[in-house]
Each structure stands twice: as structure tokens, then as C-alpha cells.
Length: 194
Ligand code: 5GP
Image 1: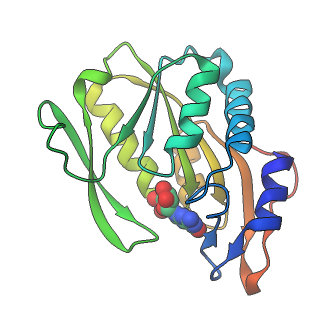
Image 2 (image 1 turned 45 degrees about the vertical axis):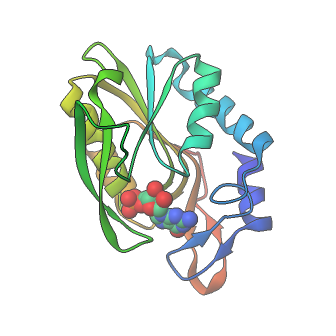
Image 3 (image 1 turned 90 degrees about the horizontal axis):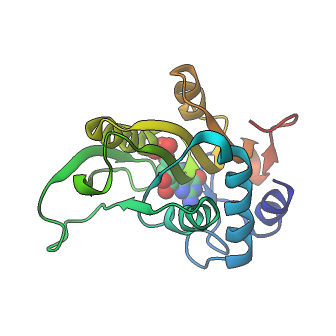
């Protein structure tokens, strides 16, 4: 997605060889018109899959997931990382190791929001080692629903998550795939986006 790649080049910062900061438009301040384009791009790719629900992880997955939900006309569920007094019955949980925070979180959804007949699209902001995606897949597995695919805004293709998930048979569609962040320079994978 050219607009997204340009935004990453213009406003993103390589904090190290492995971490990209994009708090100007995705992780802190949010660019609504970019999110709208992201929703359109995911709709175009996943349109014919019979998707009935979108599942993401709070907080940075919510904006792209909601715009995709708007385009596909389906509800969006975000897995919560923190305990909530109102989210207290019929919970499904999974443990996720956070790449950027270097800590493990239990993520949870209320089981009533996803049923075995659902076709679930998983959306997240970043794909690095695939821990967040695996946690979300574990939640869907517990609901006995099907996974229609995984939509990622920014994939760091030099980390293993994308390969692990694709090898496991999941259709992972990333809107920008980063080949390297070495020496503060952001470079994208060449060729066709997957
Ligand atoms: P994974 O679970 O695939 O290892 O990492 C994905 C999760 O970690 C995403 O949900 C995202 O919040 C966070 N993350 C991983 N790498 C980066 C990065 O380079 N920049 C930012 N801003 N977040 C990242």
C-alpha cells in the first residue's frame, strides 16, 4: 500500500535494528484518513471470504480493525490485556509475550461474542515474531470458529512471525512489509505484496 509506505518513510523512525516507531499515525496519534484507506485495502483483499467478525488486540489494533469492520459491515472485538470489572464472565484467555514491552500478558475476550459458525478475520498493527497473532488464534480456536485470514498493517519481514504463520497455512496479508531497519534506514521488501 503505497500511501502507508510513504507515511512510514516520512514519519516513522527506526528506534533500533528491530523496532519501528510510528506514533505519528498509528500507535499514539492516529491518522483517520489513512485508517480509512487501510480499511478499504483489507476489504479489497478479504472481501469474498464470508467474514462475520473481526478480532484484534487493544489498543493499536483497534483503529485499523474498526475501519475494516466498517468496510466489511461486521462487528469488531478487541481482546483486552487488562483485567476489567465488567468483563468477568465466560472469559476465554491466552498468554502473549509482548515484543516491545518484554513482558507476558494474559489477553481475554468474552466467549459470547464469537460462535462456532463465525468466520473471523484477525487484524493487528504489527507482525514481528507472531506472538500476538498466535494468542488471537488461540482465542479463536477456543470458540471453534474458523479463521478467514490475518490482516497486518506493518509486517517486519525480517522477523519470523510471517513465515511461521504462512507455513502453518494462514493467509497473512500485510499492507507494508519491511525488509530491514538496519542503521536507522527503513527499507521495504521488493516485489508483490502478500
Ligand atoms: P509479535 O507478537 O508479532 O512479536 O509483535 C507484534 C506486537 O508487538 C504488535 O501487536 C505490536 O503492538 C508490537 N510490536 C512489535 N514490533 C513492533 C515495532 O517495531 N513497533 C511497534 N510500534 N510495535 C511493535
